[in-house]
Each structure stands twice: as C-alpha cells, then as structure tokens.
Image (cartoon, rainbow, N blue to C red; front, side):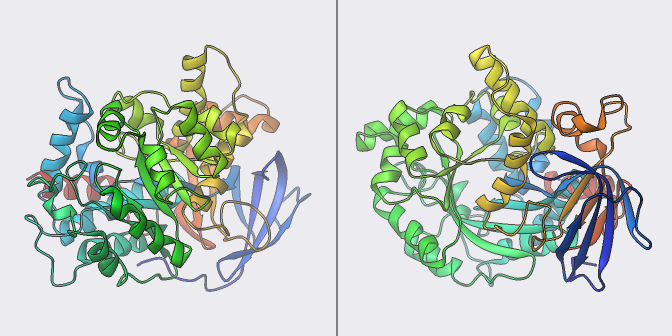
Length: 451
C-alpha cells in the first residue's frame, strides 16, 4: 500500500546519529504525525518500546535530479563507443515506447530502488508528457500522474519538476522523438502544468529543459510560473560545449548569461550539471544564489566533464546531488565522487568535509526540491531517516566517531539497512516493506518497455 500518514507516535533509538556537524552516540528520536517531535542525546540504551536502528543514522537523502525512465538504459548504453549525442538516440528509443501504465511500473520500481539506497525524496525532471507524435492523452498529465502515483506506492516523497521542452534547438521545431515532450508554447505548457495538484507526498515544481529546448522569449513564462507559486525551478545548464557554442551563435551570450538576462536565476532555481562555465557564469550563478545540482556518475558515464563545483559553492551556490540517468542509484557514491573528481581536476585533496558532502545529499538537496522542512535530525523536521550499517565489509573497522567519513568515503547503497519516511519504516533490514521484490519489479518493468 502507498505512503500514508504516521498512525501512532514512534520512538527510534539511533546507535549513532549524524547531527549535522558531528556523530553523536545514543540518540532517541521521537516522531508523531510524520514529524520529529524531540531529539534526545545521551540515550545509551534503547528506551522502552523504541525501535533500535543500529549503525549510523542520517537524515533521509534527497535525489535532486532524476529521469526515471533512464533506469531502463542501464548497461545497454555501455555497449560500444560514442558521445552524449549517440547516447541520446538510445534514450529517445526507450522514451518512444513508454505509456502511462508502463511508465508507472518502471518508475515505481526505480523509486523503490531509491528507497533501498536511503533516498527519501526525489526530484523528477519530467518532460515525457504526451503520446508518441505529440497527441495529448485524455488526461493531459497522465504521465506526470503516473510518476506521482509511483512515488507514493514506493513510499518516497517527490517533487515533480514539470518540464518545458519546446524546441529541438534554438528555434528549430521538435524532431519526431521530441514531439511527445512539447506543449507547443510555454503558455500551453503553463496551462497544462496548472492542473497538477500537490498532495502530502508530492510537490509540484517547474523546469526548463535547457536554453536550446525553450526559446529565449519564452524562458520568462516558465520562470514567472514558478515564481508566482514560489516553486522550485530547475534547468539543465552547459552540460555540453556544443550547447554553449550554439547559444553564442544564436544569442551572442553564454547559456548562463541568457538565463540571467531572462530572469531565470535566483535562490529557488537549481542549475543541473553546470559543467562548462566561464568565470562570469560562475559569478552570475553564485551572486544570485542559484543552486547547482551535480550528478557525477552521469557526468562521468556520458563523458561530459567535471564541473567547477568548489568554485560555485565558494561563490555562493548551494550544492545538491542527483543520480540523473541512474547508471547507478547511490547518493553516497555521488557525494564521494564530487570530492574525488575535484581531486582529479585540481590534484589537491580535501575540498569538502564529510559533513559538507552529507549536507549536499540531505538538507541542501531537499531545499532544492522545495522541502525546506526535511533533511535534518531536529524537532519539527519531517521524520525521514536513513541508517547505514557500520559492520559491513566496506564499513567495519573505523572508530565510530569517524562514521560520517566512513559513510561518505567507503559505504555504498548496499549498506543502507533502514529507510524511514514520515515516521514509517519503508525499508527494514534491507528489505522494502511496500514493494516486496524490487529486483523482479525492475526486471519486469524494463522488459515491458524494451519489448
């Protein structure tokens, strides 16, 4: 059954808890009505009636950038050679075969995999709106509703980032693959997006696919829609140098400058990837406090490059993390990769502490998705928790006070033992409580899509 409100107050005893700056042993967390009501340190043993969570418990992790249907691409796109653009053709072929029913099944399984990886909230960058050829379903939001239902059934929260995708590139009409992405104009996109409704587990945001996919004179329409609703706004930015070159040819400026000039940047906006930036671009993003979502495993998998994450954060851009194409679903790997990729780029170590990387994976990721009341272990926050084993072959050995470093630099999604959303245990001892056989669900849903 889907995610439902917490029925009765529950106390969880955390053997070790990450409290934002340090690891604290013996912490009791009281929850009621889906929220944390108290955090009590100094609890050496579980209080009577408490559920013991042994290992290191973090706030739930936020996957700030997802394309759920890309889960069907795993391994397939590793055959042969090529670039982002050849990968995109394979992606289009999968997108063309999805229906609301098959998309629901695939997304439910992918979101259940996320829950098993400790992810309690996902930002779904959703542009697969219509039937092949661009015909609207009887419910114009049938595909988006499938994603909202899938997240509920998998037991996690979702921010549906409904995406405007109107052009094949700087004014060119959509190609035959992209017709099902397009509403024709930003005004028609906004009219359709208006019909989406928030619910307990779901919030509605907006996205601009990219500066090549939304004409410059319509960028403001999407930004205004998000601004009027105080909703998050996301945009793919400078993932490829070809996009930057085409933008300069069309408008004489970089994609970042174009977004700035059209009123898109700001604290509720998140730029995804931000890989190939000029110094001026970094200044524009940082000074406007535009967030940046890094997706290191996808950026490596597609041979995109290494973005200037440390410079962006130093200038004022909060960082979040996403699994994007789902080459793997592991937010601990994304956190680790951001630091390790920066080491490769600069040939120096220690750009972020483990605490800073965990914040990107939790509190700052939730903030990027419009869930400012999640991502921390404190009274009043949503009762979303993730527990990582400290006795696996990857995590055994280090001192408990180094548990945060162990989690970031050694653990993987396979070490997640418990995931709690709204005070309810969605994953218990490594088993999903709502989707009993996630591997079978994944295999069946992918087979149905690939034919």
